[in-house]
Amino acid sequence: MTITDAPPRPTTRRPDRLAPLAAGWLGLWGVLALLATITGAGYPFGANDPHGDVNLLRLVPVDVGPPLFALLLLTAAVAALAMSRPATSTPRPLRLLLAGYGWAVAAFLALVVPDARVLVMLGYAPMLIIGAPFGWPPVDYSEVFTWPLFARFAAVIAGLLLAGAVLVWQRRTAEACLGCGRGDAGRGWTSPAGAARWGRWAAGIAAAIPLAYAVTRFAWAAGVPLGISRDFLTEMQENGAVWAGFGLGAFATVGAVLTLGLVQRWGERFPRWMLGLAGRRVPVRLAVIPATLVAIAVTAATLGLVANPRFWELAGGDGLNLATGPMLLWPAWGPALGLATYAYHLRRRGACRRCGRD
Image (cartoon, one colour):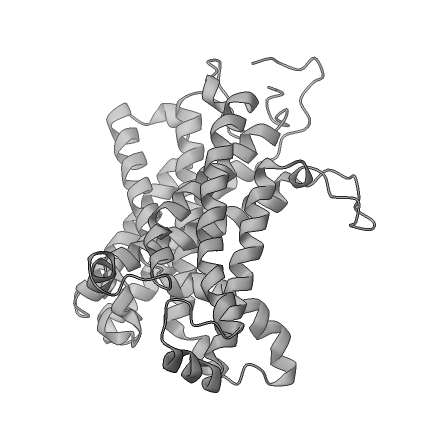
């Protein structure tokens, strides 16, 4: 670790704003959950969700869910407000309690509340946006963009805001830089060279899994019944489902290629064929933010997947084939993509604008 000779650039207060933002967002949804408790209406999960069979919240009774969410969200909002205070004014046991509770609630909101629909929506979004003016795909958008789906995206936002607030809180407690997290003690695995080594493995795994999924969908679009019967393929061709699968396969392929960019030179500088951008440095956040969101969406989808008894039937029964096999690799996809993204961040973050550490 070195300190640059140049003075640090003017600092921003962005890290300090995370705790109030998290408290406000959590408090808003906590009040809505409290209203749902009082009125008995508006709870979007469990039995009230017609597609909630792949979500862990199906195990929570409808009459228990709203007060449970109200308690969870409102107490998390109070915890976020407490984290906005100077860490030195809070006793150590309380600091540990706040951090532990904050991380637990953030993980619950970002990974447990969402399910595969968030990932599917990210995959279908390009088709829905581009095809909307032309009336394709022929879907009722009121049935796609529903209140349960909106609540899941809101939960992801809440989880990310709270996670950011807890991270800043821990950095402040450890007397590390609030902007980059660097302290006086360096760690070899976080160095650019160390991150490059383990980041390659993570990126390779994160790219191979969606490619395995995409192969089957491309084969179906080409008329090859890979892993399915000919009759089932004919049925999908007649109702247009094969092209929806092709779109998801294309989305997965693009994601796999971009994942490889996390460890390739063209992921750091735009390639020559990109007119107007050729040779310029790729902004770190342009790669890190989308990859992080996809890693969270994939992990959330996987939790709902492994909690479904049918998943384990595929893993050990006659249902395992070339069509379902790639899905069994999903539990490794999200963590691998998250690690590859973090390695990319460590390699490219450079000198901190707040503390000047390099």
